[in-house]
Image (cartoon, rainbow, N blue to C red):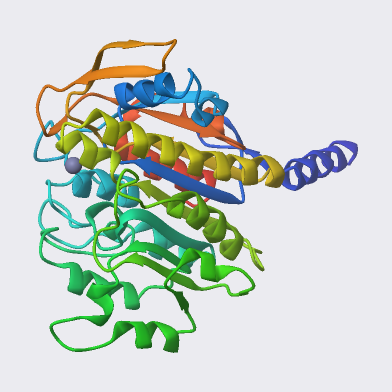
Length: 363
Ligand SMILES: [Zn+2]
């Protein structure tokens, strides 16, 4: 009897401390919320270049648990963003250009759809159009990523996602089929705003913000503070009446575009902007104490390398192998409850399973 009481006492303690022993005997602290940040094309050289041009330090360094991700897709040693994001969103490697389709072109369930079954709120923020490969993989299914923006906008309408912010308004209200999906979104109780500045004084649990008709401008061309502001706003919307937790994916989309353009300044300015969003996320996570933050990339772009520079003047000289993605592993940084489970070297697909196990969801 004494033993039984002790057993119940310890079990109760473990349950209430939100802590349990998983099948592989690893102790897990389970977070309530998870924020997955993807720097598209953000390899170690991209992070290093931003760090050196910023006086030798970045906010990302506050995340102390670090791992490496193997990025290859099912069809190629070099992934594209569609297969890379499909791996994060479904746990399956697939062919390049697939939006949540398996190697037999059968649809895979995106993580946001699975999580909504558990009443976990979800959000997507990107500095591309919201129908671009990475954000699309968190809600849509398409055999090929190209020329399907309007179809993806239509697919978004059928989801339970709470927050969507990025470019691509035209795919919702200037469509070839003449339908106005923004009206449809409003009918589904979304607040739709054109400027993130308009958000103040609004109170809603469902928010859409289009920052551009198609692709948003780069930082160098005047995008301004969209990403850090959208990040703060998205978190505050998801954290309103937050009883079951939330999952938010934030993409720094254009780090990759700087790599395709073989433009060091483009890469550095976009990575620094992404690092400001990281700062906003970490500020929330530190205060909240119940949020796991993951910061990673889908692949490296450009075979980018730092071939010169000066730490006194914060200048960088970068060079490129080519204007496309490479197969180098990319880092993953973790902060918050359960961050220790993200150290090591593993495949991009494992990120999905680790997220589910952090939410204590069996797959
Ligand atoms: Zn790319």
